[in-house]
Image (cartoon, rainbow, N blue to C red; front, side):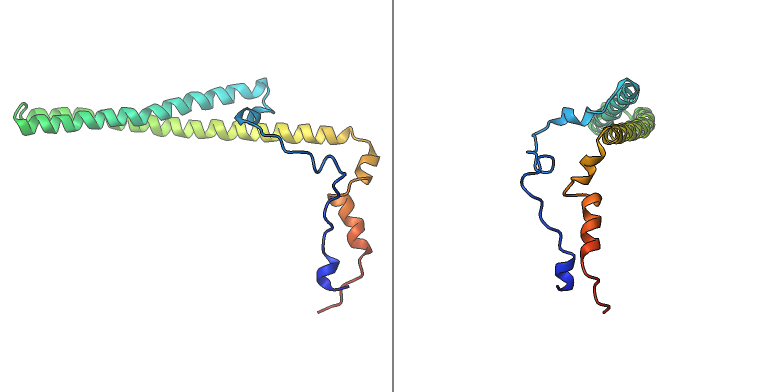
Length: 163
C-alpha cells in the first residue's frame, strides 16, 4: 500500500441520514435561530445605532448641497464674501458634528453587533453541547465520520516507511 493510499479517507455511505440530510433553503431569519430574551437588548441596540449611522450619510449629502448652494449664491452676487464665510463655516461645524455622531454611532453599532454575534455563537455551542450530552454512548460508536471513526481507521493502517 502506497503512502497516498494509506491516508485516503473513504467516502461517506449514502445510508447515513445525518450526513446526507438534504440541505434546506433557509432565509435570513435562520440567523436568529439561537436568539433568546437576553440577546434582544444587544440586537435592539445594534439596529438602533445602525439606523443612526445610516442616517448620517444623507445628512452629510444635504449639508454638502447647502455649502455648494452658498458658493452658487456668492457667484451670482446674491451674497457677499463675509456672508459666504459665515454660512460655510456654520455648515462645516454642522458637518463636523454629524461626522462625530456618525463615528460614535458606528463604533457602538460595531460593539453591539459583535456582542450579539458572540452571544449567538455561545448559545449555539451550548445547544449543540447539550444535545450531544443526551445522546447514548452507542450513537458515538456507530458514527462513520468524525474523530471517533477516524482514529480506529488510522490505527489499522500499516506504518509508513521513513523517507
